[in-house]
Length: 88
Image (tube, rainbow, N blue to C red):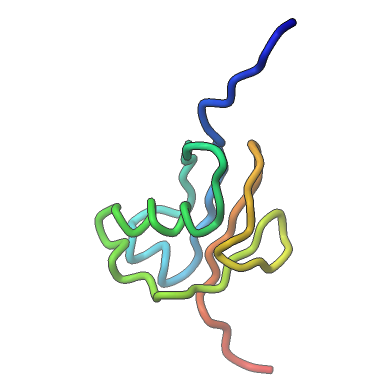
């Protein structure tokens, strides 16, 4: 019987506007230990240069749906970190 071991979850993270400016990148692929969550993505981003300037609870989306930090991740997910939007 074959047993598949999961060593990590690789996701693509998109950063926009001021967040992209603060971290100096618009996207990054991250591999996180499984099980992973959006909160783990934020923690990893905060460890990068400029990441300490991210707010405590930024808006996040997983595969185009808004989610919280406790949202679990699957390999291949796309995570967007969204700055505040003006207007109505």
